[in-house]
Image (cartoon, rainbow, N blue to C red):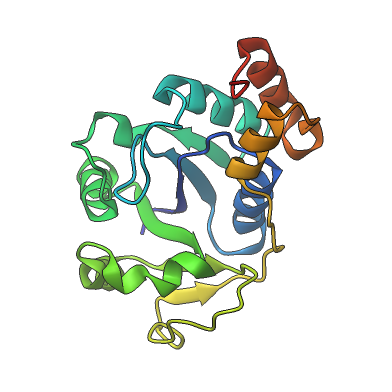
Amino acid sequence: MGKKVGLYFGTFNPIHIGHLAIANHMAEFSDLEEVWLVITPRSPFKTKNTLLEDHHRYQMVYEATKEYDRLRPSKVEFNLPQPNYTIHTLAHLFEKYGDTYEFSLIMGEDNLKGFHKWKNYKEILENHHIYVYPRISKDTGERQFEDHPKVHRVNAPIMEVSSTFIRNQHRAGKNIRALLPDSVWKYLDEMNFYRN
């Protein structure tokens, strides 16, 4: 078996302290040995018009993770066909690193509820483990994966910070610096992102 790597997908527009806390918690308090933060160029469920360019979001993830030994930024999806589907990314990673790494997915409870709608979700579950972190939710929702042997619930901190909130409040002139790793704030501020 290769090194256990958790894949934490997101647009990271921008990466914030919530993302970092969850990624680090998974690396430190589960059996995952590394967490790769996979920057998604475009999700089938999100419109692209509010996204910063891929290389800027990669740079912010790099800045946020560079002092964490077990966290890595990943731009693996940048050169894959659009829109990106997780099943294709996993196949690509297996082809490239199959003997070196054993890949698992990291997702919030809210994403698990809709997991049955993902492309080839049964194949994903057959070949990969899923590590789930808690989210605040009024809806108990999907229960079909509740006792699945490959779905692992990790008692990570509940982080309700959102990139959308950060972008909107920054645009409104609020000080959102405390919600970002310091190096990310500096990059975002210098580049004058999300101002208009």
